[in-house]
Image (cartoon, rainbow, N blue to C red; front, side):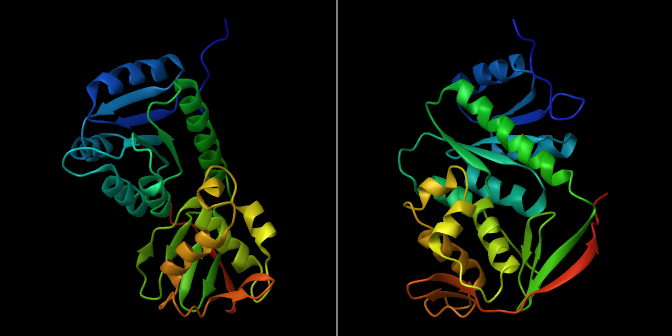
Length: 252
C-alpha cells in the first residue's frame, strides 16, 4: 500500500477546515489526516479567525453557509489580508455563490456532497499553484496602468487611491494578459485559453462574463468602459499604457 503523500514542503501541509456541520467536519478532518495533511477544525468564522492568529495554515477549506459571519465574508477577509489559498464548500446547486466566491478571490470550490478523493485532488492542485507562486523570485516587475497597480507576485491589485481590490484567479490571468499586451486586440479564443480550470466553465463557454466582472473592478463606469474595450469582430483590448517597475517583495 502506498504511503501517505507528503506536503508540498518538508512538513505536512496544514489545512484549516471551517464548517459548522460537525457530522461532516469531523469525518472529513479524519480522512484528510489519513491523506497526510495536518488538519485543524473550526465551527465558525470567528473561531477560524482566532485559530489563524494562533498558528498559520497553508490552505483553508471554507463552508459558505454558516450562522453568524458566513464563508464569503471570511473568504473576502482572508483574500484581502493574507496570502492564503481558499477552497469553498457549498451545498447549493446554484452557481451564484460559487461565482461570488471566485470573484472575491477564492481559488476553487467543491459542491456538497462531494467525493473525498476529488476534494483531495483539488487541494493538492491549489497547493501546487501556491507553491509555484511562492517560488517566484523575490524581485518581480509590477504593472502600472492609469493609476492602478498589479503586483503579480502577490496577485494584489490596488486602485489609484491605494486600496486593495480583490480579484479571482481567472480575473488575475485575464488582467495580466491585457497588461502583457497593452493596446493589442486579444480574441476570445486566446483569452479563453488563459482562463484555465473550473472558472472557465462558469463563464458560459466564453470570456465575456469574465470581462464584465473585471470591468466592474477597474472601470469607473462599466456601462461605458474606457480601459477594457470591446473590438467589434475581434475581441478585447486594454486601452492604456502600461509601465513596469522592479520592486523588491516586502515579505518577511
